[in-house]
Amino acid sequence: MNMENEQVKNPNLRAHHDYRRKKSAKEMQVQVITFALMIFLTIVAFIAVGIGDFSVKFIIPFILLLAVIQVGFQLYYFMHASQKGHELPMFFMYSAVIIAFVTVLAFVTIIWW
Image 1 (spheres, rainbow, N blue to C red):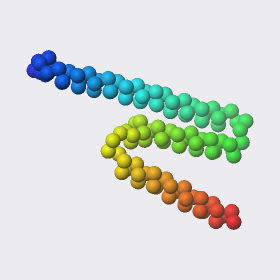
Image 2 (cartoon, rainbow, N blue to C red):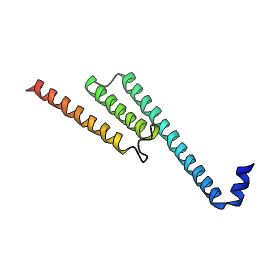
Image 3 (cartoon, one colour):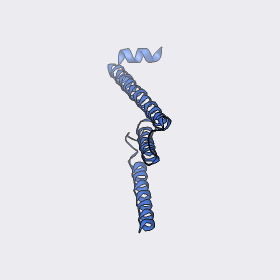
Image 4 (cartoon, one colour):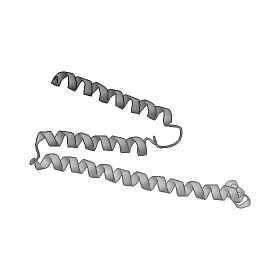
């Protein structure tokens, strides 16, 4: 009851409350859409394997690509990596991905030549 009286007396509190409510609703909408996309990508992966008409040389990279896309969705939308204050952890994660890619590329190159 006290909070409601403060909001009536102070229009700034009411405006801030309305702003936060709209922002939270938008964030929830984005998360639901992202979740639906992730479920769709999972179904696509199952269908691609279940059909059986594709070769292994196509299926494995295709599933890995879908997995990378889902990891990106999970990092940016469910773990809130796109929000302010997460720049340094994301820098380290990107650095680790680059190092892993270069390492795998080096080993593949050494094995082939």
